[in-house]
Length: 219
Image (cartoon, rainbow, N blue to C red; front, top):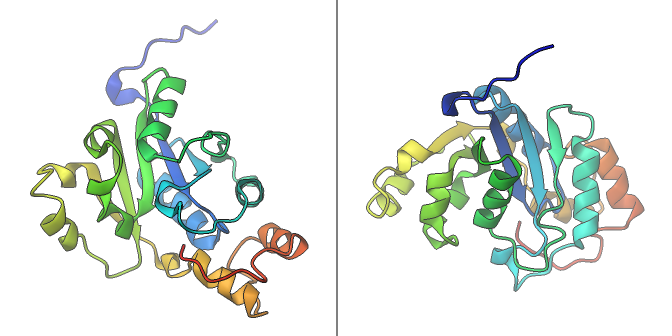
């Protein structure tokens, strides 16, 4: 019979959280999550589709259940990936700080949380709800295309949060050139999206007739 000893803080598991609209999820999201898992030695990555994205309240977003199911189809064959309905099932706008609080509680506060997002989103972190608390609670992985730097972050955020570069790490991902906006436009124009998103997601999009008649909306 083995004895389970309590973990020291430095031994707590590293869990990645990847939030997003996922409208639809694509290869860029998956490559980013896998690279982050390997590079930062994460035990797993949890995908969290937004229910009502706080930054897109004025814009049309595909029904949450469609986005949840597409994300599920995309991550189900990776044993290190999982998906959570925490934001999908919430009746309130999705805020990153609330999601991080939720997972801290789930893991009894004995976890190191790495939040995976786009580097461009980090530039607006001062506008995020309770951003100071958020920066204290987790590490940010800022995914970007090759050649992007965080110099803008230094000018825009560092004066207000001097230790920002202890909390944000840049990770270059060539596949970040792919976007959900690009995929939606190709569907609308009748062009192929093969290899831009997993085959199961591609089939779901066509079977559910998503994005075929929609007006342009940003990712």
